[in-house]
Image (cartoon, rainbow, N blue to C red):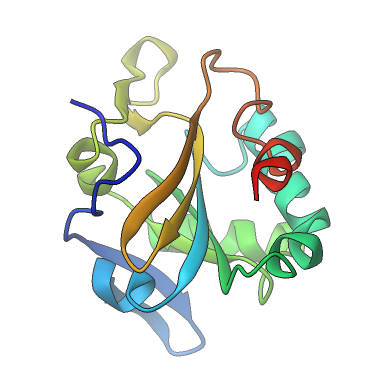
Length: 161
């Protein structure tokens, strides 16, 4: 069953890029005591993710944060090295925090994983955005069409803040 508004996030460990190399961060370390936007993409560098979804959050970061958001995070079922390269390649490093869910532990735990084997991707995360307040889902926007970033895009999320 998929996570819904009012549910707490499950406890998992993400990997994040740091100047000293990969570091482990728990759900609590990332979400407790903060109001954050988390958006998920099926894969770093994939067309919709790279050309539409992430750029929208990068362009709207100031407006989103002005609405009482402490941080903007993105997650994907990619390893931490790919996430780090994506952060640098897009210029989002320092504006958006990149979380590696390399084994799809988080995507599976929240019920938003999908089987992308038919596309050569393996298990991936569905595309969504959410607002998380102190570890609890406040807003959830799951994309209906795989190649779209409309319902889960920055503009749609910002309109609901």
